[in-house]
Amino acid sequence: MRTQEKSRLQQDLSLYFVAGTMNCDSPEDFYRILEQAVQGGITAFQFREKGVNSLNGQQQLEMAKRAKDVCHKHDVLFIVNDDLDLMKAVDADGLHVGQTDGNLADIRKETEGKLLGVSAHTLAEAEDAIVHGADYIGAGPIYQTSTKPDAKKPVGVDLILELRRNQLNIPLVGIGGITLQNASEVIKAGADGVAVISEISGAVDPSSASSNLLFAIQTAKRES
Image (tube, rainbow, N blue to C red; front, side, top):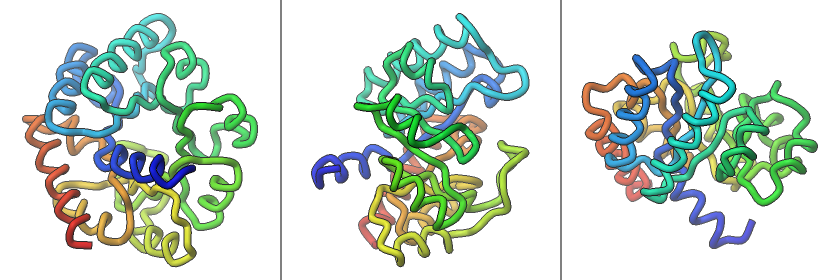
């Protein structure tokens, strides 16, 4: 990745909102929250429609298309979680996968020309993701999270520090249990951005929650 492209991606991943209908009261509530989050300043959005009571088939496709339109209207990256076919169907900006979501070499071939994000819990997993062409790493879970029942044990900001100590200069996003109160700590440890779910989706005012998070992130970057 060229230096200019890397710098742009680091900025685009600053405030990375992840959500699906499972994180909202209804599909219409999902759109309301996304619209407000975009207005509040999120820089990337991951459509993660999976799990209990999630939509599928045509309903999922239409939801993804509408969500992408909302994001692109405001120059916000639109990433699909773990669904290569859906990514292609909506022509998303990229795909995000976990450690058990398939062969990375094959996934990289299928996502040529698109962004590929990979979740990593250890230095070895992050290094493997880079070898296989990941454009950014979702490192964590940093803190305890209730939105993913199967989440691994929190690693704290030590994982971010370890990745940077080992010269992993790939864009990094801290994931898992991140809030307005601890986002700065993640950025100052070396992350380029933070990924959040409930801090925005569960907020009374998603727009204000987003703008407050972005301000904290930008402030921490200036102070780092």
